[in-house]
Length: 227
Length: 224
Figure (cartoon, rainbow over the protein chains, first blue to last red):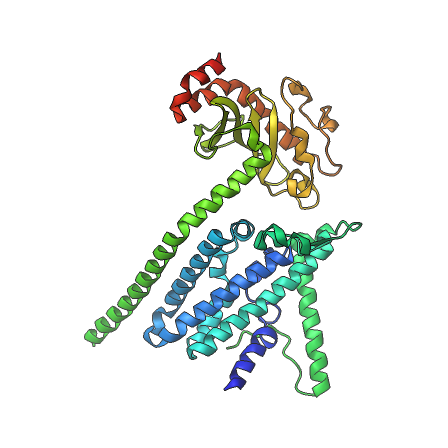
């Protein structure tokens, strides 16, 4: 039994990572990752939505006729996203100002519907919740990492804007380079493509090395969308 | 055969309606419990911004309550009616906070919040929203530089309108090389807001007597 959970976790974080393998949800990946805090915050919000969406669809999957499953799934996802949007607005207002326009866009993030459709609609509740959360966390890691790289190269800071999430106390964890003023390109949209490309390349390189070591079948380098 | 179609369709429709109903109910509930905190944090964020440009000891009224509606004006660059917050001290007009929009920035509109004291001098200016190039034009934002503080204590009385330009154009305002369009737009917008204030001073402060009825005569005196 625990094997299933282990597999789900590895799939979400590495093998089927939505950010660098499935390449689903490119819009937030490219647009929000101007800093580590922005990327990670939206990633965590997405992971919460995905866990909640999978968790609410899985128990009722047998009551949803297949003809209307997509509208029902979208309705569930849209409701959950709005709930999270309102909650962030109410309890982390400054963060909402930064992520504001991107939170409603979680609804149209393909990865959320993809996991509901391909996993939660076919599996029991607990594995579904884990799948949603792990797939979301995989995306959150990519968003956070890409954000950190772009922030460091582009602005010469680390964790800037942390105070938006945790209040002014968090300012002491921020780091700003004194003599490096940043490469503007990294913060602008091209930086997002270059950064994401590098991450995909690094991930593929590690994967190829691992497989060469174990001498197994060659890796699938094309984004795998088959479910 | 047609029976089973009807049965199947109604089952599908009822399922869809049931999900829509549950979803709407959940949203209504969450909206209800988050409305008060959202309003509170929005008011708090707005007040915190006001404090940056209008020191707290210069007024003693509730800025968020004392507002007047301003019709769209070319001088403020707003296409929709906006609200101005009126500050009073001991029932005398102390200042006003205006929203202005500069349309001629490098990319998109620049929204400004401008606090002007009753004597016409600027207490402070902040950029509310902009889409200027990060690292180049964004120094107008207090998060990226102190440039916006150049406007502190400026006024039409102190600086004639023709000097309200960036130095490159023969004015008195500094700018950073490589990004002239952005500060040029901001300087122009602040100048026009000042002119709006001078032209509408009477109306701005006359209306404040409606909001707090007990100080009618004092405001009247102030107008004289």
